[in-house]
Image 1 (tube, one colour):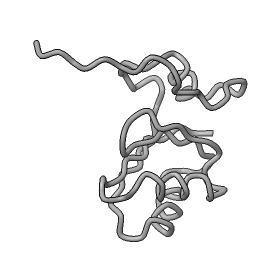
Image 2 (image 1 turned 90 degrees about the vertical axis):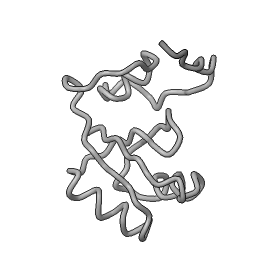
Image 3 (image 1 turned 45 degrees about the horizontal axis):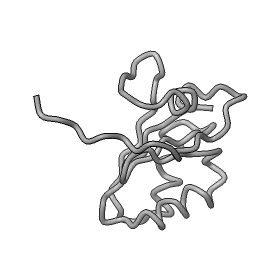
Image 4 (image 1 turned 135 degrees about the horizontal axis):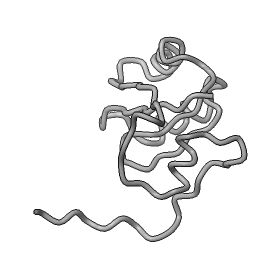
Length: 106
């Protein structure tokens, strides 16, 4: 299983993107911690998963990039990092909880 960052155009309604991710067997599971982007787990390579998503999304612009856990950095809850690292015992993380705070200018 490989984690991917899937980012899609804001012209694509979330309901359509969610339906595609839920409907295809190419996606094992996914979570959406950001607007217009999801972390997707799949057994496929990016070159295989991309055409599957394109088939369902048509002309919607999107970017699909494999996440290499050792080469990624960011600020996310621990359960999201566990999901990215896709430990088999980790279920799809819940994003229920305290919302993130707004960034403050330097």
